[in-house]
Length: 273
Image 1 (cartoon, rainbow, N blue to C red):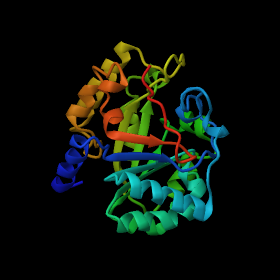
Image 2 (image 1 turned 135 degrees about the vertical axis):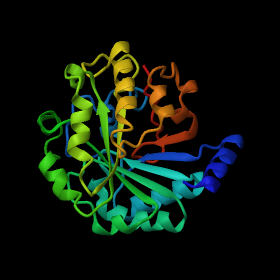
Image 3 (image 1 turned 180 degrees about the vertical axis):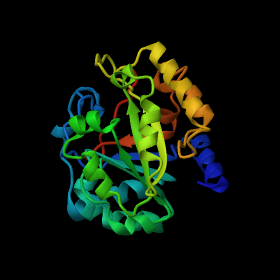
């Protein structure tokens, strides 16, 4: 976003509207990843789960998403799932429509199937591929979206890699640097993001970092920033990991983003423990 977009975003906030919108466009995903928040029991508040929702296909999905967009008028949309590439035919219609509306769109996927070639030429579309660590761990957790398949499916694209850091990765202190050594040399990778595994309320899972591990990760990312220009993370963002928000009221994502699930009406609940 440019300066005018940022000013417009603040205008949205000051008028009580959230400038960002995140939509789960499908409940379907071919992966069964351990620790996936989207399929957790509390993801939608506890009364229903993503797999139990009615979702949409074809023109019903295209029209439904555009209706939400035209009502909410966001500046930026994140298209998530499930995995959005399950609905790649619908996205091939939706993305140009969102471009015409001047909306920046981020598609978050496992890249289990090829990214449509035309997306590489859309200047307001960013494709983010989720990768769970180095190949031995990732291929076990994210089959069939293995390293080999991802590398073939992103060829010719301009991809941002996103890796969620889990406690298991930190058994080896050089893990993050090893990850950057694999992905940053590739021409089809524009940037790399790290986030830290964020539990649902009340969750107990081996992925959850201790306070000491969070501190280590933040310091390690600060160290790696000048060494890897493709590590696309501001110092201010990294510093937030040292003192994460204690409630959704303090979370910048929760305050600026409206989140809607696959039936295009159910709200996604905050993920803070």
